[in-house]
Image (tube, rainbow, N blue to C red; front, side, top):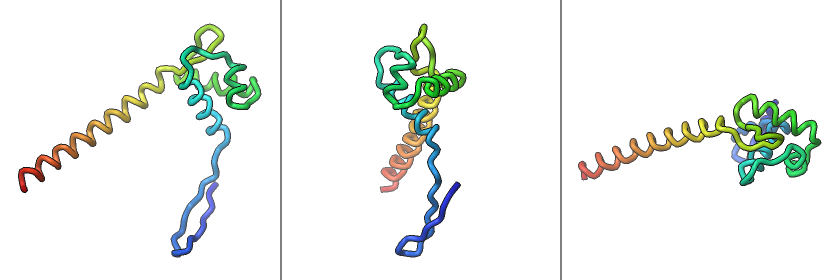
Length: 110
């Protein structure tokens, strides 16, 4: 759902509703990213202020997606997130190469 508002200059701005479950999933991933060792579900639940059952549902879904993996009865970040980083890095490297080419062509003109 979205709402529209008009600011002082008459510009229309769109504001979208935030989805709490997605925020909590992000909190779980950020928490796991800060851990050096795999962590239990109850410890994750406590850290993100969710019931253990709800946390376990998030973790099961994240595991299905490859974003979380289990080590015994504990959880850590999964390799599925590495794919995202690889794509971002590749995109940034391509952008840098384009910029470098543009700079070289400007240097040749000047």
